[in-house]
Image (cartoon, rainbow, N blue to C red):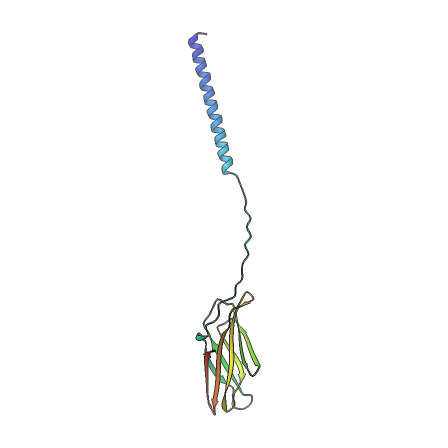
Length: 163
């Protein structure tokens, strides 16, 4: 072989070695890149749902109405209370007079309580609380004074925020 043939042969071997090296490097690079992209990992996280008490009902939003039972027989008054909704799933409504408590639980923003009816002349004053509940927790109660008055056949009711 001539010197020129050896030189050509050396160049061909060198070119082949470079091509081989490039293929290996690219192959490893591609394999490495593929390995990086296909890495899988996992992250564990625990979340605990919290519970909170609902906001209180604004006593200034409470309105009331009254419907009396028959004149003869049991004397009673149905006191219906309405209030603005808060972030609650239920409400406990209580009316207390002379240590006698009438309670009703509701999921609505209205409740009707059957109370002792006033005599022909007189006023019965009830301390009313409306307590919102959610997730087993109670919010602050709204405190209202309900005055049921009767003068012969004329009846009235007045609800005001308690002082």
